[in-house]
Image (cartoon, rainbow over all chains, first blue to last red; front, side, top):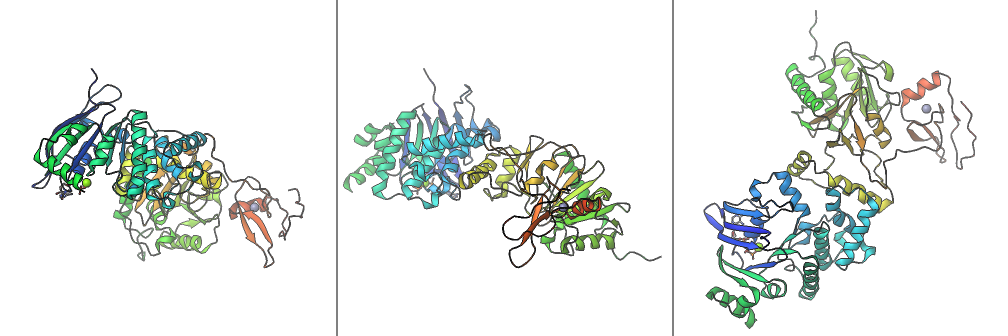
Length: 257
Length: 297
Ligand SMILES: Nc1ncnc2c1ncn2[C@@H]1O[C@H](COP(=O)(O)OP(=O)(O)OP(=O)(O)O)[C@@H](O)[C@H]1O
Ligand SMILES: [Mg+2]
Ligand SMILES: [Zn+2]
């Protein structure tokens, strides 16, 4: 059997006395999309930031299955290794594209940055790869020299996705990737994400408060309430047959609206 | 006996020791920016107070000082700094590159090759080469520490994407001893190759930013580029109009109010030395189309 790509165990993050999230254990398997859902303030972002190495945890373990076969706790990696992982094997898609893009450099440079970070030094090749990735996120090649400030919200989000995928990562973290977009453009971005995730066999941990997004993208769901996991299971099962009263309430409230 | 009005070279001994420690650390780690407690100097920051403090810390009574600004010894800035040290340290001054033991500079490296035993002190406005894309100091420090220099190439990529070639012409980033990326101060990239393997000691002082860095003699300094867009220095179509020098950095000088201009050595000492040696260029200002034939030297 293969092993999980990410393994979280007894994770807790406190903000002083306040509990951001606690008693969190779950695995993510290669190629699997896991959605973390729950109401505002339930600790979704706290959890995501902890497991993606962007926020210190208070206790617990987070282990990652490295390409070289090691399965270390992130805390045991050197800062250099952790940062290398973040810009090669991992991706992070922010809700606000401006948080994940360099707004003052061209789309091509945004996509090419990770390639240059790992040592690519051939301008023509970097540009070709950038063009190819812009195409994969449905941005016309003739926009390659435009800056993201000239892009619509949906284009910016697609650019952010391309910028993350160019190094062929294995694990992507997303925090409400369509949350800031108009409803009309959300569908296109979701469609695109779904296609890329399955084409590339990506493992994804996606935070969303939108159960429709979870239904469309994820195979498995984690339901959080006040910092704790209250229910977890296959997405279809959780949405069609929620066990926990809180999940039932969440699902019901969506159905009503 | 009269006591000097100032301590030798203006700064007190304790401050000079502190600056020397920073310089030594910089020499030990070529290209690494060493923080130092920059002092107020009796001149504004734009006048190169970082370079002035470094010069003050290394100057001895037997030194011979040359100061240049844009290659010239006679600009206000250069004259003032030279006068400052002539007064506060009573050192000999010169405009001859070969005669100087310490050369403080802004914007140029002299054309005459520097030799062992000479020290060149650069005035640096912004020492951080990563600043333009990463304003957070905490982050740039980590990037230097972990040798994460991809951002420099993002800047060069952007240059090519916008201009078809690397359009950065001064403060062109270099990698030192295959380790630290360094801003060589706003010298033209024409001068970058002169830094590589120089027998002189090269010191860089940024006053407002409180940083000192150094290139010890014979340090390996490489200008960054792409495989398919290699680093190139500026080339000039014509020789110096006054001394006929080629392979030197030329400034465009407007000679009249009818659009006349000529190209002359930016290094005034180099130009004068060559003219004293009997070289002479086309001389006359070129008006409008370049129809004037150049004399052979
Ligand atoms: N830096 C912080 N300091 C103190 N408390 C914080 C901090 N960040 C988050 N919290 C608190 O921790 C709890 C969980 O916050 P978190 O941002 O993880 O929730 P969330 O589920 O992502 O919410 P939303 O859907 O609104 O984004 C909230 O009560 C929040 O106020
Ligand atoms: Mg959140
Ligand atoms: Zn000349």
